[in-house]
Length: 169
Image (cartoon, rainbow, N blue to C red; front, side, top):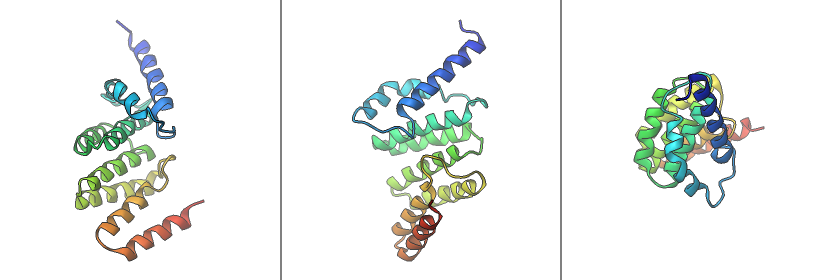
C-alpha cells in the first residue's frame, strides 16, 4: 500500500498528465472524446476529495469532465457532476468561474434560461473578485449575451458584447 506522500505524488503526476493531454488549453483533436471517455473514471478519481495543494488543477480536471459531458450531450449528467464538484472545491478561483460558466451553459443547452441566469450571476460576481479563467476570458459575458438573446433582448446582448470587446486586450 502506498504511503500518503507517495500517493500524493502519484496523484499530482496524474493530474499533470491529464491536464497536458485533455486540459482546457489543449487542442481537441479527433480522438479527444474517445480518449477522455477511456480515462473518465481515472479523471473522476482525481476529483473525489479536495486537496488544497492542487485544488486549482483539480478544478481544471473537473472542467474537463464537464466539457466531456457537454460534448457528448449528457447535459443533465454534466450539471449533476459539476454541481457536486463545485461544492467540493470551494476555493474561489478563476478556474471555479470556468466551472460555474460551464454549468450555466449546460443549463442553457437544456433550455433552462432562468437556472442559467442565476448561475451566471454568481459566476460574474466571483469573476469580479478573482478574475476570469486564463483559457476563456469571455465565458461570463458570452453566456450573459446568450441569455439576453434567448430573452429576445438584443439591445442588452449588444451592450454586453460591446463591453466585452472594449475590455479585450
